[in-house]
Amino acid sequence: MKKRKSLKELSPHAGRPSSRALRWLRRWVRPWTRLAFRPTLLGQENLPKDRPFLLVANHSGGVGLAELMSFAALFPEQVGTEQPLAGFALAVGFDFWPMSAIHKELGSVPSTYEHAYEALEQDVSLLVFPGGDYETLRPLWHVHKVDFNQRKGFLRIARKANVPIVPMGIRNGHWTAPVLFRSTWLTRLAIIPMTMGLKRWAVTLLGVLGAIAFAFLPINVWWRAFLIWFWLSTPLMMMPFIPATLSFRIGSPLETSELFDQNLPESESLQQGYDKVVEAIQALVDQGKTTPR
Image (tube, rainbow, N blue to C red; front, side, top):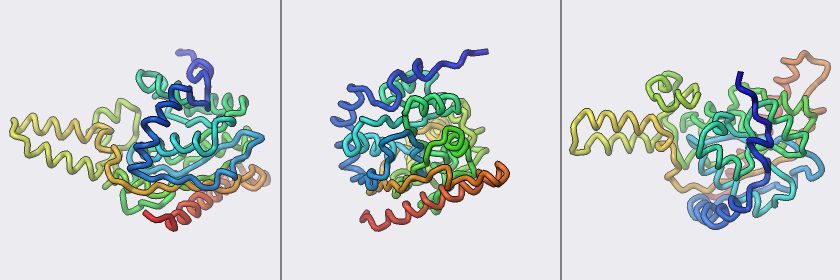
């Protein structure tokens, strides 16, 4: 059995971007996101300063690149790096280069229970997107709906570690890379997502536009078919290509004492906490419509 690597091995400075990463964020990412998405971050005064927490947010836009890059550029600038905050990222990304190198530079933490508890014990807070690929690949007509697909792992972490959950609502991310539909059977047709361990895949507006362009190339029909299949199988079709004003709103912390009723069975207690967190994040997303696009 393969030995699990410790957090120190995978992310030596968890929650704190390296000086090289900070320079890159300031020099390249911040100007790009400011031009394309004009992101705003509100409510940072709600972040606890004396203890670790889970910053739990909704997720949109295919691979969520516009949101991730915008937040990564905004957070050090507006909040600072005194209190570490680590992205809770897919564990498979720590197993191969270049993603493993990127995660080390950014101070990300693998999304496993063991690494989460290890990080929180070191006073490293975690940024969590519970909806994962299910939520970020939702169709465009659910653009502002918060839907974690009943995933409650983050609640188990918060309850066991006794840390608050801080809700964050993100609005307009889905406009940057519109998703037309998602499906589990698409994963079987698109080999690349299957090798990444994804359970579902989607077709985006950019994917359709690219497929149409490939269909009219003056080359052999089989080459055109291959290029269309390859294009629709890669995350490239989920890159943000539409400018949209992104807003990030952080709400008040939700303590474990108000999230979970110890007198209820575990399943009911977790469901109670789930409903409260989703409701809080949905309210923050809805507030974001007051921000002009």
